[in-house]
Length: 248
Ligand code: ADP
Image (cartoon, rainbow, N blue to C red; front, side, top):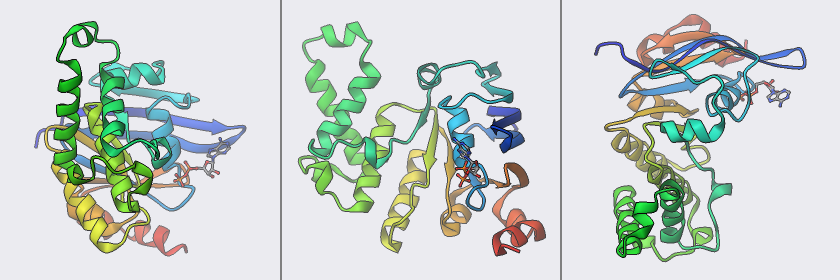
């Protein structure tokens, strides 16, 4: 695979009142790969996600997307570029059906498209597009179920469906399998691998069977800095990584 970073950070730093949560991080996320960000609690993973999606401004460094400096973008700019973070369960509307939730995400994506809304077929088109996404993630038979009534694993799958509706080029998934039983983990792992086709995925993930199974590259963060980076076999054999995970 030739190196073609879709996203790159150079010296990315975030300081909270003197506490350095993200310390001079250089990341290269290669286009078309699944890249995992791992590390012990407090390592800075969530802060990195918040910096990439511009929920937080960095205190140092730059972020490049397809070679363009996006460090000063706002969250809407970043989303328009195709960098989409998974919606969390808290963003799923529990009293709306599964189908309605995906339709809303599609509407958000199409919201500004006057030509789309002018067309008489717009509502049918929207419905069909939402059903196609539900087919893809295996939730079609739950189309009319209230999202709030879904079992936990399926709720999290709905998060992936609503994220897909935003047509991400770079999809950021925040612990997509956290709290799931084996069966759901396997299902969501396969789903991520499937939806990653034709796009790039950056995920924070604790489950090492998921990381080793589907991720091309792993970046290990510790105390805000990159401790190791590479394919799973290499990173998991790194004595510093082993030590960090043993908590010694
Ligand atoms: P992780 O996601 O790897 O568990 P976080 O990015 O949530 O780590 O946090 C990294 C460090 O930054 C932690 O020590 C956390 O307490 C600190 N931190 C995160 N957000 C803030 C904030 N808004 N103000 C002060 N400290 C913060």
